[in-house]
Amino acid sequence: MMLERMKKIYDFSVVSLGRTIEPKSSIYSSKKRGLSLDEKREKMLQIFYNSQDFFLLKELEKLGPKKGVISQSVKDVIQTLVDDDLVFKDKIGTSVYFWSLPSCAGNQLRNVSRKLETDLQASKKRHTELVEQCKALKKGREDSDAREEALNELKAIQQKHNELKEELAQHVDNDPAIVEAMKKAIEVAHSAANRWTDNIFTLRQWCSNNFPQAKEQLDNLYNEVGITDDFDYLELPAVVPLAVTEGEL
Image (cartoon, rainbow, N blue to C red; front, top):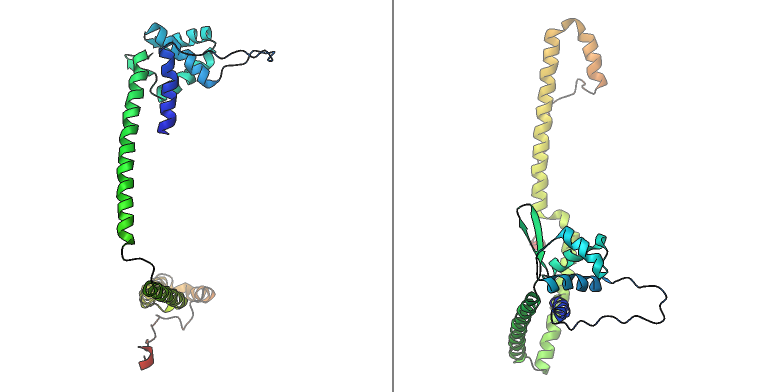
C-alpha cells in the first residue's frame, strides 16, 4: 500500500519538473481515445502547478475541459488527488478552496521515503532478533535417539489426552455443574407452579364469595379448564443420591 502510494506521488512529481511525457497517438486508432483516470489526474495537477493558485471547485470544472477532462468528472478526479495528499483543500467561510504546489509532491515523496526507510530498518532489526531467537531455540534440540523417544512418548500422551476428552464429552449431561443448574431450574419452576396454584385457589374463593348463585356454572368451567377436585399444590420428590462405588472414585 505504501509502495503504491509512493509510486503515485513520484509519477505526479515528475509533472512539476516539466518532464511529463505525453502519450503518443496510435496511427491505427480511428477514434480519439478518452483519458484514463491517471491521465485526468495528471492534467488537473498541471492546472495547479502551472498557476500555483487557489481554486474553487466550479473554477476547476471550467478549466478541466480545456485540458481534456470533462466537467462532470472533475470533482471525482480532484477527490482522488486529495485522498493521495497531492491536492489540499480547506474551507474558508462558506467556500472550499483547492491548491497544490510543485514542492508539495516532492515533500510528500521525501516523507514517504523516510517512513519506508524507518520501516525497513525496524524490519531488519526484527529479522535479526528472530534469527537469533531461532538459533537459541535450536540449542538442546539436536536430533538424537533420546529426543526421538521423548517425542514419540509425547505424541502418545497427546493422543491419549484427546481420546479422554472425546470420552468426557459423551458424558457431558452428567456434569455436576449442569446437574446443579438443572436442580436450580426445577426449584424455580416448582415455586412458580405453586405460586400460580395459590392464585387459582384465591380466584376460586373470590368467585364463590361474590357469585354463590353461579356455583354450578363455575364448577363446570373449572372442570373444562382442568381444575378438578384433585387439583393441588405440587411437591418435589425426595432425591436419593446415587451410591458411589470404590471403582468410580
